[in-house]
Length: 319
Ligand code: GLN
Image (cartoon, rainbow, N blue to C red; front, side, top):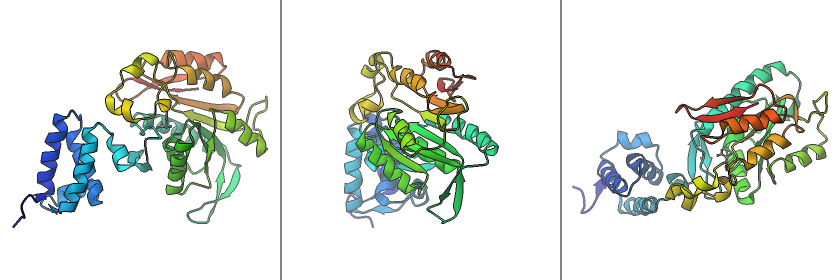
């Protein structure tokens, strides 16, 4: 016999879904499942395998507190301090932007480029892998500018073993989150968090380490630079949804009056750090494709292309 007020997972999920739906969550069922799975410390699929499992009073109390936070528009990722990206799990908190599925297109495109490049390059730095003590050869160097949670740098390094990355952010609190994710994914030997403004810390890091330049004609020593910079313009900043505006860091979102400030700077400052044939790959906002393509072409980038995401919206510019 169930005690008074006791509920099964299934019953609780139904009630929570209804409540979240009434308060305007666009994903009420998913939110309820993720929060309950978090409290029970199980994978979401388990909730469906044991729908009749009874929730204890303590579990009900804990999960109700999380639902209250969601009802106040707090994003689920901040509540459970975790977000999945490229199939990997990332620690997040309000110091960083929550990794978005759209950004996976940028990572996928850069992975393709890196795999092609890695097969051309045979020499590189010898590094000892942390996880299994074997020696690995890192032949490609890159930087992720405005790394936030580190989701781009970490995913690239997980997916392409031949790369070393600098993960740069201006915010010390964001950099702590990135460092935590680099440790979590055992990549401290290949991904280095670096504090500072855009490309400035990369330039001084490379100078101090006196890395060999790979340019024949004055190029720098990076094979690639990737960034998902803040790109929302002033007008759109006013129209952000409440859960973004009230909880996500403004500095990770606002890209100046026209949203293009960081692209201008990245396009202008990247060439001197990149090897000839190096790559600059950027995530962009829905209406920024032609402007960002122009910035890159004006700075001498070649083969500049703009790629749409699955929704058909311009999302990535590469050159
Ligand atoms: N690079 C991080 C991401 O893509 C953070 C981006 C940002 O803060 N603008 O999620």
